[in-house]
Amino acid sequence: MIKIIYITEKGKNLAKKIEDILKYYRYPFSTYHLKDFQIEGKEKGFIFIMAVGIVIRKYIEKIKDDKTKDPFVIVVDENGKYIIPLLSNHLGGGNYFSKLLEGELGGKAVLTTATDTNDKVGIDELSKMYFLETPKREDI
Image (cartoon, rainbow, N blue to C red; front, top):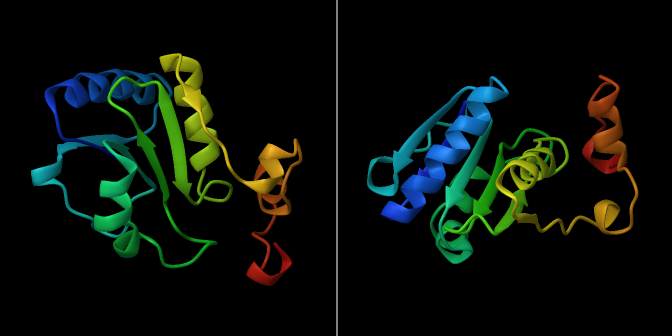
């Protein structure tokens, strides 16, 4: 399950657009206002429509556990202009979903992983693409 979380009315409108995108591609999702949102621990990913600082200060510690198992975390500004994957970009699919949203919303995915910024494919991403065993942390 992918959770979409928003704060403002403008964020709620963007959340509806993201819902339509995920529905079209048949990804299960649920949408929450920040005050009703809870981390359950079995999510595939999170799409926060708010400031990066809020997500880092309030939620990253509660979400991150293991690089090979973490759900993805993406932050999108309320205008849908910037899509920023923060956590689990390769194995968790953060970069994939950021690029998907980029194409559908017309925003810009801001990818910062070394492999992506150097036009390379990481071993962790390659293993996922070819349905291979997830590499050990020390091999990534």
